[in-house]
Amino acid sequence: MMNKVFSSFRRTPTREERTYDECHKRLFYTSLRILNNSMEAEEVMHDTLLKYFAREEFGTTRERDSWLTRVCINLSIDRLRKKKSDENLLHSEELKNTLTETDSYEEYTFRGVTVSQVKDVIQTLAEGYRVVLSLVLFEGYDYEEVAQITGLKEVSVRTQYIRGKARIIEELEKRKGRS
Image 1 (tube, rainbow, N blue to C red):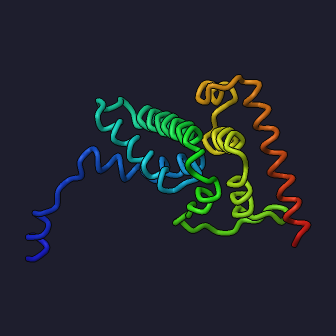
Image 2 (image 1 turned 135 degrees about the vertical axis):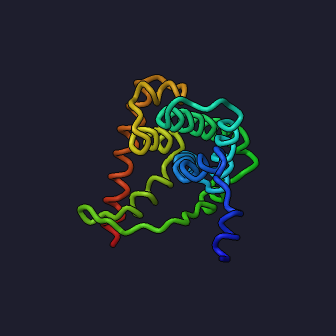
Image 3 (image 1 turned 90 degrees about the horizontal axis):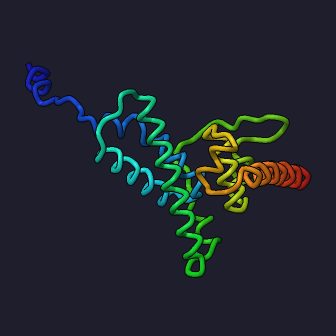
């Protein structure tokens, strides 16, 4: 009898609630990889969803997800550019120390290198390398798309990608030698 009473209070989730549930983690981690700051990544995730809710609905889930990802990346890069211009007020060490990741993951190992070691190295990279590597490796964009997103030349994107990868390998080898 009580179940019938409580079941009448259940309501179907709204479009906004469904979209939030389906997309918020992906958007947060996309922004986090670019910004390297969990508070700012959360703000970008919320801003992205608010922009989406102000629009008409898309025809397919794929179109929606593509649009959300693109907007999230653009907002993250905009915020990164703004932060760069305000850099005189903030110290980069303070920003690096604010990153925390709440989801746990297993320590996968490949040739003696763990996921957390790679993530730690990526966090220490210069902003340009980190953004390009995140967009290419984690988001799956090609060099041309990354060039359009970042406003860089395609040659510069390739160069930053190659140099960023080399720095990751170099740093991992240094850390391996220390242990």
